[in-house]
Image (cartoon, helix red, strand yellow):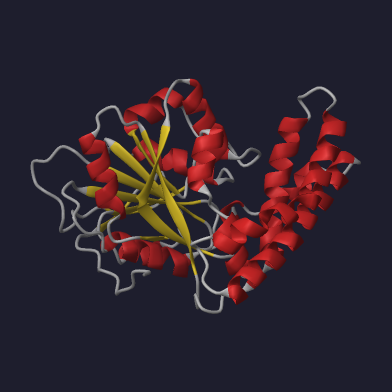
Length: 337
């Protein structure tokens, strides 16, 4: 069930941080005086005020957290800064990062954070009421734990009648367990780590790379393993339509293309990849049929239709790049990744 509720008013005075922008730095209800431990939450933002309010509401309603919490919202180029939204909540600091990309936005938030634990969520996501307490408990129980990646579910308008995009993304978006097991990374929309680990691995990359995959694989190369935690749950809205899904895959395909060109016989391998993706929906029938993320035949049929559309579109992007299309035109908007 997706948490809802009214926002809490900021309990202290707002100050101006002239080096960046607004800060709202009052101590929240759950904070304990004399407790030096702290959790810092970083939220990149771009033109999503309504979604940000919903995200911050879910963070204000976290249950079972014993440590004090600070939240950094880092705006990344909105026409209007979300000052009014941030003032509605305790412990929220609003910063501004003008370098495009969620990676630079997160880096700025981290540079201001004082927490021993860093937690990341996107502005358009909703945290489960126990999201933060799960993070806190897991790190407290295991001192050898370095990085946590949580589960991401699609927030549907009507689970009984999902849209084509909702049905498709419920099965094929945010496959965090698979990403961690096979590629050593998880998405930054639901990520937590010890601050000392970030200092060791280094900053997130810019908009020209898949910054979550790049950071996670750099961590893995240093022997720092990401652990999947299904109880660490957030909800992510599905894209409104297949056009928005196409924008996502433009950016991802452009990132993959940049990496592919460094390999020998890259063009032939790249073309074969496109052809394999075009033929791949046939192998996915059983997966869609038995997934626990959808209910009913209608939803499964819509997921398969969405899969066919997306795989054929991805194949067309790959082949266009193989024959001279400009990858820079495919990056899209970072906050729809």
